[in-house]
Length: 605
Ligand code: ATP
Ligand code: MG
Image 1 (tube, rainbow, N blue to C red):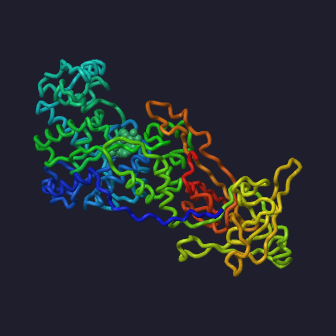
Image 2 (cartoon, rainbow, N blue to C red):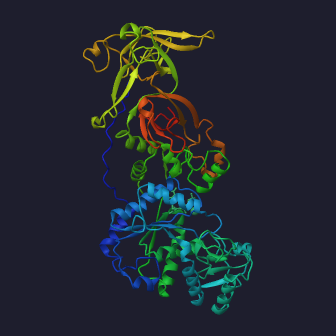
Image 3 (cartoon, rainbow, N blue to C red):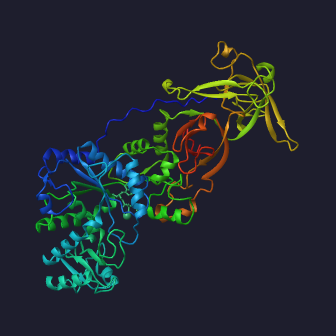
């Protein structure tokens, strides 16, 4: 059995159009944003009016909330937003949507920065620009709220949360006006300032936009835009005890940053009318410059056997179901990276799944296929034996000569070479030695061969890859009848690459590692984290479908070329799959490899 998996790396696919590209093509052709100005930093209408015509043709943004580590779904969003900016001569902003003081942390901020960089993108127009932070706009947001109050477009509501919920109505039932809805702007302004100054309890009142309690869209029934919350914010400390609601903050963040296309996932579709309403009001009031950003929604990524919710991933970490955010089984970007995923493989995945407006599930094998494809063309090859048993070549000394070799017992060691990569001779050759004893896979021997088994069984000949042909003589067993070694004899003059070496025809080729120069390694074999293809769909408890066999740690032998590899180096272990030197635990003298992906899609087969 030889490794016949070498495939040419797929050529870069042409950029496929999608509905977002069509919108941008149209906007560029129509000059929708041609009059925009940009003052070099985010700001209000006056700030940008004093700036230059915006050199960026479009502005997009990736706005994570720093309340967890980014996952594969965010990678899709990153590739869309940064990819569009790159392809259209625009700029993509990295902005921390940190308007919620309680759940956010600088640990997450730093990991998000690292992940976006690692994926290959820089932001805000230069490789060392600082990310934007929504919390830097709290001052403007407060001013915008006061403006809405003065314009009669917002009021302070002192109903209890229960009353508010009851009076909001529902799908078939219009809402009921709050008794506080008719307050004068002066009265609202006084109350709102008291809220800001800490005169009222958390939750005792909120500021609401005054729109229409009978709107068919419940999001337009006077949504809350500011709440009282005494919490220390990781950026602004205790400056504020009132915080803007996401629906109010987000459009403002986009507008201050002169975003043109604000791309989000479908669950925000119902928020779009409020987004537009708010933009119109603040442009009317001269606070923001026209034209406003526009929101567009795409389908979020759903990947089989994977959960993509920061909250649920946090639960796996804090309940010790995995070993951390960067556990190689996690769909976080740090986990995927440690598993052996490359930026190219994730970008290819994002291209391949495309952008659509309807929800669907992507098969996990699509992601694995992208990794396989991107590694195949350049990962060095190596031999490794994952489930080792010794093969003893009984006539070795007889054939090779005795007492003059470099083996521990003076036996001869035979130099073997193999290409680092079968399609890249320029990468050179690997060197290793065959001796009297080599490690082979336990499964490469069957005492009574099953149908179609061409490897080792008594009387059968196989080639030790890059070495000689051997004939199997059977197995040595202990008293319990367990195999302790496989016996073989070497057929002279069959060394791979020497004249006449193929005079003996064999049906099987097996991989091996020399006992003399093989290096011990810890190998971590990973499998899917869940046994259910949709672990959290329909409110299912995803903890129940955790795969108990998602990690198997074994001791393997690998060829000596791997002894000096570095963390993050990736290899194809011939016949087995793609492996990466673990970026956390691998070190010289303690080799640790993670299974990134098998050679073929074998899941469920
Ligand atoms: P989570 O539920 O995991 O916390 P989120 O949507 O709240 O996700 P944010 O940090 O607010 O996470 O999201 C940053 C950006 O990433 C948003 O624009 C969001 O739409 C996008 N995003 C998040 N999850 C996915 C996904 N599964 N597929 C595509 N885009 C996603
Ligand atoms: Mg969120």
